[in-house]
Length: 289
Image 1 (cartoon, rainbow, N blue to C red):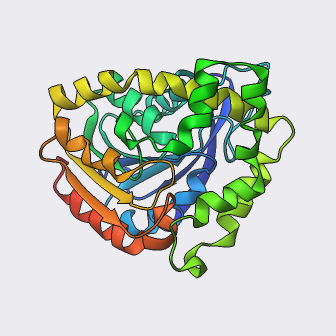
Image 2 (image 1 turned 45 degrees about the vertical axis):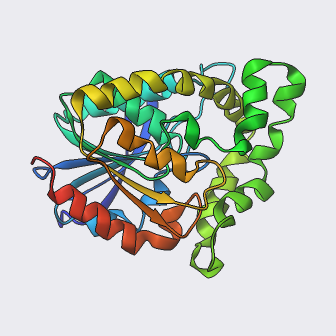
C-alpha cells in the first residue's frame, strides 16, 4: 500500500477509543501533531500530505474532541494531565521511541507535558501558536482567569459563550485578511462536535483546569533550558488569544529557537499552510533522524 495515503484509525487506550490519522513510511522519523481547542486532527488535513513523503506522521484527537471518545463529564476527569495520559498511552502502544512534536493551542500543554516526561524521545518541537509563557496570554483570557480564581457557578456560566458558533467563527476569522482561504468544513465540524449533548460542560471543566498549564510554565522552561530541544515557532501574529510575545519568549530559554510570524490569526494553517509547511519541512530536515 502507498505509504503516503492517510489512514483513519481508532485504538483502545485505557478503555477509551482514541482516533488518529497516520501517514508516511513507518521506518521514517516520526512527527506527532497535537491539535487545540475547539478543533481536532482535522486541522492538519492539508499539512500531513506535505510531510508524509519523508516522515511518519501521527495526528490523534484528544479525548473529548474530534472522533475520539468523549465520555460524560461526570464520568471522566477532564484535565490536561488526563488528556496527556491518553496521548502517552497511544505513543506507548504504537511503540514510538523518538519523535518530533508539533503543538497548537491545547496541544501545547499536552505536548510540553509529554516532553518533560519523555525528554529522551523528543527530537524537536514545532509550536504553532502553542503558548508556554505568561506574556503570551492576551486579555481574552481574563474571564477564564476569573474562573480559575473564583470557581463559582456564575463565573462558569460566563464562559458558556466560548463554545457557541459565533465564538468559533470569531476564532477562525479574527486576524484573517483573506477570509476565502478558511475552509467552512473546519469550523463547521468543530461546532458540530461542540454542540453534542453536554459537551459544553467538559469544555468548561478544561477551561478551569487550564490554570494547571500556567502553573507548569516554570517546569516547561526548566525542560527547555536543561535539554535545549530544537524549536521552531510559527505564529499567526493576529491571534486574539496567544500574543506574539509568547513566541518571542521561547528565546529566553532556547536562544537558538527560530521564530517566524505570519499575517494571520489563531488557525494559521487555514490561511498559510504552504508557507508554514515549507518552514516545518526545512526545520525537520535539521533534526536527528
